Image (cartoon, rainbow, N blue to C red; front, side):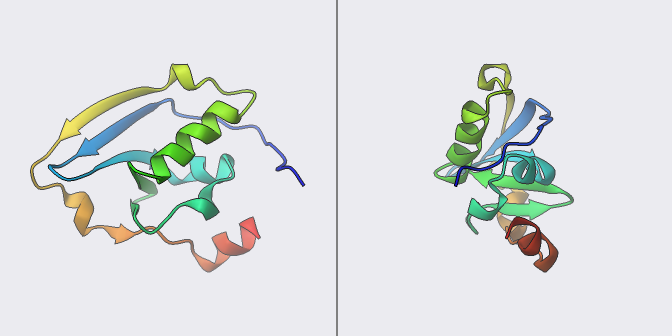
Length: 107
């Protein structure tokens, strides 16, 4: 059964953080639920203060694909600022996990 698409409001402006070994896109947690992909995000991504830092190899691609496949969104409107840090604090954040309430919400 296909997913029911709901109205999605994106910020369209994101920050991509990179260190010498990896990169992450900082995305409001709510947008992952609005796009219907919160349950698909791996523990390779991190979270803090209502944001998820999507790892560049798989989770970021899922996010971009969800925007691209949504009929009312335009992936070409996404703007990304890049920040390079030798020692990013992202690696010390909590790994991405869903709360029990969030798991129920997407079940």
